[in-house]
Image: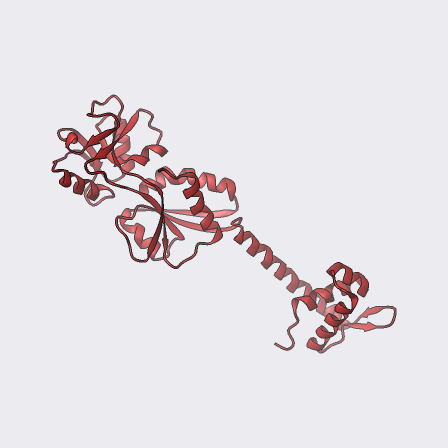
Length: 299
């Protein structure tokens, strides 16, 4: 590496080359003239050529200097571009963010969050990968995405989570539908009511079945669907009450629907930013995660 010049030497060379004077070059670099002279001599020693013919009154560019200036300016331009590019990445102004989101969250929460994020970071490219709950953990663990937004069924080795929506299962129904209670209802009080929920093996169904068994009640499931948003739409059409996470109403345009918290037992259904342990987020991805926690939190 003996012949590789330093950045300071290249900047001194370019300044002297264009100004033709040590004094002007020194002023532009905020250095003393002796310091610029030393940098030039060091550069010439490294390159093994003379760049300027010096007299007591002037500096004359040599043929080597005329050839070297193109290389020097290209290197300096690339370094400046590197600094600018890294500064933009560090500030989250540029980059690419990949997010896995379970289907319901991708349809309800993420469109609003994405619109808000792009208003603040218009030059960042964001890809939302909507997926089934069974694929969610695999995508985050496999580092196919920067992070996920969803619900972990249980503590998962290798994953960390930042919960920002503290949710629970609820009965969501048309406000005119006659159900016991006001803002709360027990699992036993659901007996005899035809219900809407997801099929076995999908999303919240296992939590619903476990809670019903714990309460000792046999649920009358009238309609089984694949997506939570489908169950919500059916409830909005008056087909009956749906068993869903309460937060789904916060991002849905169904003004006639109300949610009643399911009790005895209460079933938590939290939404979190899920990341791979030991992996840091890029500034752009971290900014999206922080926005979710800051602006879309539900206690």
